[in-house]
Image (cartoon, rainbow, N blue to C red; front, top):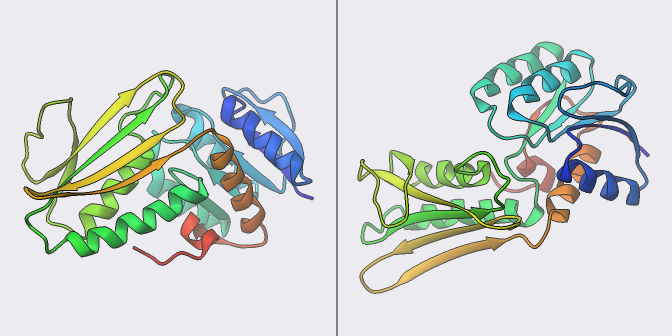
Length: 241
């Protein structure tokens, strides 16, 4: 059994709590909106699904206290290098993922492999779309950005652009990403490679939040006793892109 501190106690935090309890863990603290009402320093691991404006502060607190940190908050990555440097200074353990779903991380590996195959096929042009619930604040999603960055490594695209339906990027070398916000959709990511004669597609559709929550708890179980900076590829023993 591990003692887990939850930084962020919204829908994801509550889903993580339910999954963690079902796996025999104890939730020792629930910190919401940066307000510390529970003592978290006794935690074996911190799982952060908070807000972009407080995420780095939460990571900093955990690493400084010598507690491994699992981060699933997006929108704070302009300070990602600072987090890595702090982790190294503290000889701590830190894992960030744009998406903790086991299926999505397999999807990442498929995306990277397909991009390597398609890199030499100039007759195909790629496009990425993502659909999420209307409460999601950032666009494109962190998952879409990860997919785009991995694709760009192996193709002739030089960047990505968020574009509206029916429009094209200002830069023809940018991978177009389209973001949709509909109802309570947990998350759908759709990658297409189109030519004049056919189309190749990869799609991942989440049915609920439980897949994300389970992956975060598995990462929290895995990281304890380790030091360094990790990703879900390490947790799942997937090949590097």
